[in-house]
Amino acid sequence: MGTGFDWDVFARAALKLDPNLRIIAPDLPGHGESPPVSADSFETQIASLLKTEKLDEVTLIGYSLGGRLGLQCLLSDPQIFPVFVGISTTAGLDIPSEREMRKISDSELANQLREINSESTFREFLSQWWDLPVFQSSARNLDLKNSFFETRMKQIPRAMADSLEQWSTGVLPSLWDKFGSHKGRTLFLAGSEDDKYVQIANRLAATTPSAELNILNGAGHQILMEKPFEAAQCVVDFLDRSNP
Image (cartoon, rainbow, N blue to C red; front, side, top):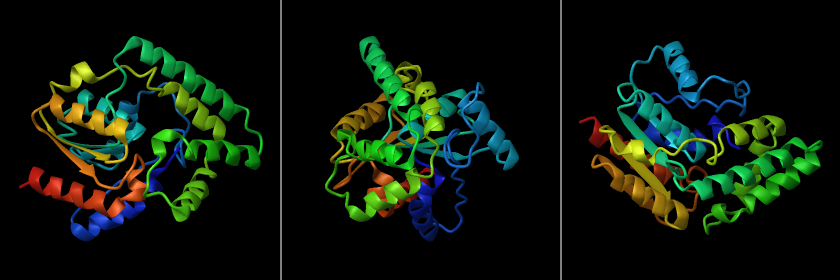
């Protein structure tokens, strides 16, 4: 549901800590100003972006769905992505019954999005999205809620539906059996109040010996909104250790 702008506060904080960083925050396909999702793989689209930017090697950072898609890029070409940071993310679902349940629930959500025909019904959908249990945390407040609605109301519901169906955790393959072979540097961040993703982050960090784990106190799933400064500090410190 987000865009590259969700990284704005994080990016500004990171650049204050290290002015030598170059940060590119593209919208995912079907989000913001990016074209709709297509038959091209996400890895292919990211490779095209890097070619346009004339970059041969980057640190890849992804939040939630972006992190899950980022893992695909990481595993597709580790040399281009020697360092990876996953924020509130996962390597997918590796239990077939859970995959099928998630595929069905995401398809139902996609159908709801396609039926939206007015700003009021879209706002109602976003209200339900904001109230999902996975997003609850003590760090959320009215200002964050207003910012959430301001940015998400600019999205196109049908494009969101296409993204949801194509990139559902029930559709994307599990990467748990592949990630353990990755030898690059990785950092996983999760909010202390996001129990589900704390468990996932612990599992991800335990999968490969090169991984680091950081749990941000007082944060839930939406770390970029709730704790952007703390997240930026964690990532910049990690990059300093990764590139001595």
